[in-house]
Structures are given as structure tokens and as C-alpha cells.
Image (tube, rainbow, N blue to C red; front, side):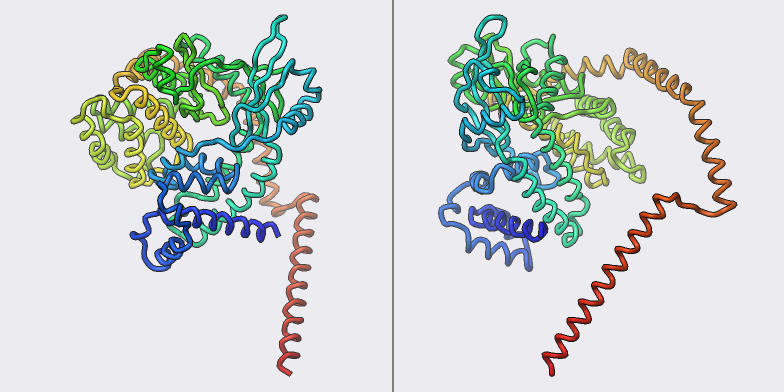
Length: 524
């Protein structure tokens, strides 16, 4: 029954996409056969008013009609241009995560249930919602801290959103399975695995304790960074469904006129934003992965404050070295080294030729060096790079795709602040410092130290490994002498499975027999 209901919800979603003109906005003229016929039929059922909208507007209206879980689906797919294509990913990235607010009384009930305390014991004053998104909404409140009244922001999970998302997730999995079954060319993109990733990331985002932990970690990492910080967390008033944090007084970064009126230097802010992002990515391997301008505030002293850390990205040391060496290789036009880095990281299968791959990378890098530095987009460079790597069977790397998406957004914000923004000149101090510290002599010493630690840990495990090897040898000897044996639990499990199989087989035979009797009776 759950599959049937998922099918109905999927059909409803398809109908909404048709009516709002999303399907009609796709490049259907390039299709042929049945898909082109379906595209033409979709155009007939599209609202006339929707045909006058831009594709991104049509998508936004459809997603809002479908509900919060589809907003989150759209935002997630915006991080996967390898799945939906670059143009659609850009449209999805423009989705405004703004939903209708829910009643204050429901927010109060959720807070009291999550923290086990009355609202008056937690806050001196709990105000109306000031912003609402697909998963939660934010209220302004006051608390007593050090004998003084302090303003805080309280984020509360939307009632019923987990149940709604769980039901819609069944539809997503159904669509992914159908796609894998009937569209063989899409299997390379692993749609079921993509849906599993969506399910996991959203479960994490719906536990506000984990967002609080991410804020705390990023806060510790950036404690001494110039011009960047995140709000502090009030752990006493934070639970699964509620997150209380410092109230941020500042101008949103999407308010260009407000920033200019406050006397901020927009070029300095743009440079600070990019350098902060690269510093978090390369130095810490942990970055804010939803840095659109609505989540960024600028305080009176020019400090950037990032909020809403529901989506965060992590890069291991190998991925950070991969990123730094690629950027450095493009800067120095060492395309062979860029190709070698891909092979050393294991991203491109060994059966491919390094020189041929370097030739493909040269096709990306050489046109860049003929342009003014301020027109070169690092985000576009990574996009082109990932397109080329597909030709060489590079498997999808979710952590790199998330990095690429975030870099697209951050670089776009920087260019909004400063149209003549020079990405390479701004990034050079951070990238160069990381390379000097991790790929030079100092980096070699760190690698040697880490290798020595790993070797020491392995030596400590030698006695245990020897004991395991001895036990395994005895088991193999017994198996060779007496054959394969099952323990009692395994034997019982096999017996139950066989019994279930037999029962289902008998039921199937009875159904077939009754069907044949019914047919014979009809014929007579």
C-alpha cells in the first residue's frame, strides 16, 4: 500500500510540474519519439499564465505548491549538477527557502516538549516568528544572562515536517528505482544512492542539536579569523526541535543598498568572504555549504556573520590536497601535474592515459589564460573540469560536488558586491599559504609524523592480529576436515526463510488454481 500511495503522490507532483509549466520549459525540441510526445502533451495542460514566467519562476511556484519537502529536494539537487544538469542546478539554487509561518502556539508546544520546561522558565519574552523556511522558523526572544536582558534567536522545527518528508521520501525512492530500471543511461548517476544521500542529509538537518554542534565547531575553527564568525549557541535552551543562539545585528548581504548606506567597503567584504571560505575549506576541511546572501550578515565593524548551518561540507586531507594542487596547477599552467593529481587521488581509473587526460585539461586551462583575471570564474573552472572528468569515467564525488556548488554561490555573491572581482588574486594568499604549509618541507614533516603515528598504532595491534590469524587458520583446518557448519542461530534463520518461501509458494498456487476455476466457470 505504501508503494501505491507513493505512486499517487508522485503522480500529483508530476501534475503540478506540468500545470506550472516546468515540464514545458524543458528543451523538448531536442527529444524524439515518446518523450517528445509527452512533452507536447504537457505543454497543452500548462497554465497559460505560467507560460509567461521564466523557468526559474515556474520551478519556484511549483515547488512551493508541492510543500516543504520538495523545497528541500530542490535545494539538494542544486548541489548535484551532475544529476540535473548545470542550467537546472542554477535554477534550483535560486529557490527561495521562504514558507508561510506556523502559529506561535505550535512553536511554544514544540519547544516545551523538546526541552521539558515551560516557555516562561526558558525565556523572559518569546516573540512572533521573524522568518520561516521549509524545515523550521525563527522567533526573536529575550533571556536573562549575567543579570541583563539579552536578545536571542530561537529556531523551531516545523510541526509534522518529519512525517511529511518521510512520506514524500517514499515517492522519491520510487522515482529513483523507476529511473534506474527504465532509463539505463541514468544508472551511472546512481539515482537510488543520490536519494539515500538526500534522506541522510535531511535527517541530520532536522535534528537541531547537530546544527548547534556544527555552529560550535565552526566557531572554534574561526575564533581567531579576521572578519568572520558564527553565532554562539545557548546549549541550555537547545534540543532536537529547538536551537537557541545569539541574535545577530547586521545588514543582510543581499541588501546592497543597505551595505552602502552603512558605509561598508563592498570590495573588502567580497575579498573577506572568499578568503574565509577557502580558509575553512583548505585549513579546516569543514565549511558552511549554504552560504547564499540571505544567510550572511555584515556587522557594523565589517565582520561577516554566517547563520543557518543546517548544511555543512567536509573534505579529508586527500581532497584538500587535490583541490589545492589543481588550483595551483591551473595557475602555473602545469596541466600534466593536474592530471597526475587526479590519478594519484584515485578519481580517474588507471586504464586511462595520463597524457590524454592532461590534453583534455589543457583545453580548459589555455582559454582561461587569455582572459583578464577579473573575468575568470573559479567555480566555472571546476564545473568544466568535472564535465571533462566524466569522459574519463571519474565517479561522482559528492563531497567535491558540494564544494563546487558552494563555490559557485560564494563567488556569485562576491561578484555581486564587486563586479570587477579578481578571484585568483584574492585566493592566492590562502591557497599559497596552504600549499607552502602542506606540500612543502613543513608538509613533508607533518606527513612523516602522521606516518610514524600510523606505524606505531599498527605495531601495537600486532599481537591481536597474530591471535586473529591463528584462530582463522584453525577454523579453515576444521572447515577442510568437516565441511562448512552453521551455528544454531543461522540454521534457524535459514529454516524460517525456507518456511516463508514455501508458504508464499502455496498461496501463489492457490491463487492460480482459483483463477483457473473462475475462468472455467465463466466459459461454461
